[in-house]
Image (cartoon, rainbow, N blue to C red; front, top):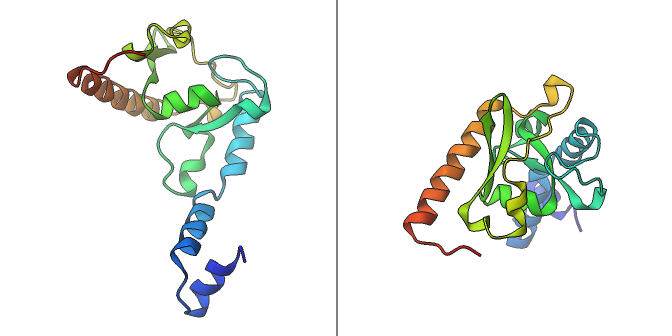
Length: 160
């Protein structure tokens, strides 16, 4: 049954909407396991911010949104603890280049939470240069963070 969308696609028979969604989700994940494995190796199995080394708590975070197999390059990723990955994707945290190091900056929404302790934390980068986060991607993420932060201010979003 799991191959039904593929069979339907090539047989000329129309696939159901559910089959199309399952097929699209499977296609989107092509290369994800390799991407995750590369980041685990590059970051020696530790979160690049917190240092957490619990495999089940770590995720391979894309810096630039997934846009096909080419975005599965290790330089487009950071190994983050699951909660930090969620904040990163929501543009509630990002990284800023300060004196040659990328430091974590957090939204004003997080300043009275446990996450405030991570403010200024240095992003631990892999030793091998080809696995380090792409500076342009980090700068673009930071620009999105700044835009989101200004929008939150304009909308007067209250801190947690």
